Length: 185
Image 1 (cartoon, rainbow, N blue to C red):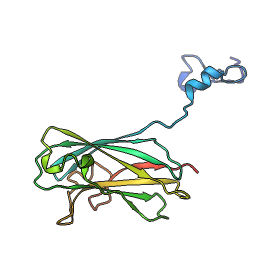
Image 2 (image 1 turned 120 degrees about the vertical axis):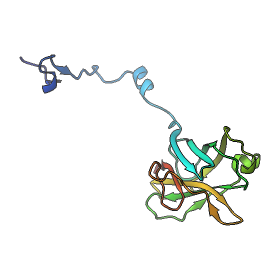
Image 3 (image 1 turned 30 degrees about the horizontal axis):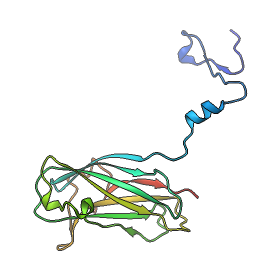
């Protein structure tokens, strides 16, 4: 059997026929190009599942946009499912680190839910949305930023422990690895 040069005979398809790569003459049309290109990187959506102290589960997060340039900021939204009541008011601690370790850590610690709903008022069954921004300083040479986070009680300087450390990425110091955001050069 003779095949055109753009066709490949795959051994697993020997009994079924052949597979061909078909390319439109002249490449993609403008309409086809618009259908497969974007003007802005969509949000980075991350599922997580970290169980923090048996009190809350970090269900997931979004980072928008999903890629930054020096001088830009991204909006991060965390989603905490409340499992048990909390007596203390925890802060969300956020550590933004250069993926290559060349720059100082940026701390974005804050009261959850914009300070409107302290953790002592969270009710089991609720999912609390927490939003904050991550900033890339102008002139930054970072190729990517790693985002680490957790819940921290400042009076006693204690973090809620990750009860399922083998199920989620973490650093062994009760910091949950949320993900990595690429930085354009």
